[in-house]
Structure formats: structure tokens, C-alpha cells
Image 1 (spheres, rainbow, N blue to C red):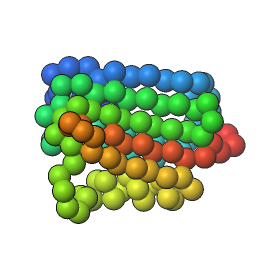
Image 2 (image 1 turned 180 degrees about the horizontal axis):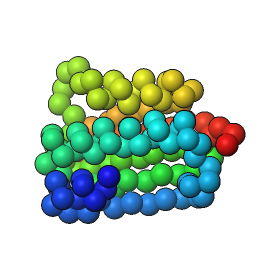
Image 3 (image 1 turned 135 degrees about the vertical axis):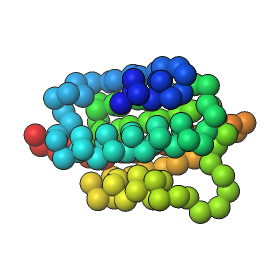
Image 4 (image 1 turned 180 degrees about the vertical axis):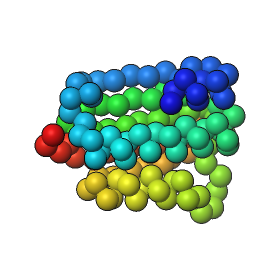
Length: 118
């Protein structure tokens, strides 16, 4: 996924994994996490005009995905379907999500769900 995104962006997104991601993320959570990451990266490619993207997955407590870019930020008004889907996937898994436009530019997406027994 990151390789395809790198081709479309013209640069490789930064990736940071904290904790044993491969062993602590259950299959059902992994499905949602990857869909959320794909949506976030797709939005960056289509709308952000970013020159830097950072992706972090941290499993030291809950399962937390953070995607940050330095692009244009979120336009004022109603969020699109993709951002709504990110929120709905978090709620479905008993978690939370947050999408924030940052000053002077860029977007921060935080998606956090509880770890489940594997």
C-alpha cells in the first residue's frame, strides 16, 4: 500500500511501528486499520498536495493509527464519505477517531481502537 502511495505522491511516506504490531493486531482489527489507512492515504493523494506524510501504528496500549501530512488541510464544511467511514470504523470497533486541520497546513488523523484477544 505504501509503495503504491509513494508512486502517486512522488515520495515515500514515513512509517513508524511501535510494539509488536504483527502479533497484537487481530485479523478483524487489521481489516479496519488497513481500510482506514487506505482511505487516509487516498485523501492525501487526491486532495492534500502534501510534500511529507507520516504514518504511525502504536500497539503499546490500544491500537493507534496516526496519519499526518503537511498539505492543504481539510476544507471547511461537511466531511466526505471517506472521513465518515473512518469514524464509523472506529465506533464499530469500540474506539475513537479524530480528523484535524493543522495550522499552517496539513491534516492529522488519529484512529484508536481497543486491542482484542487474538
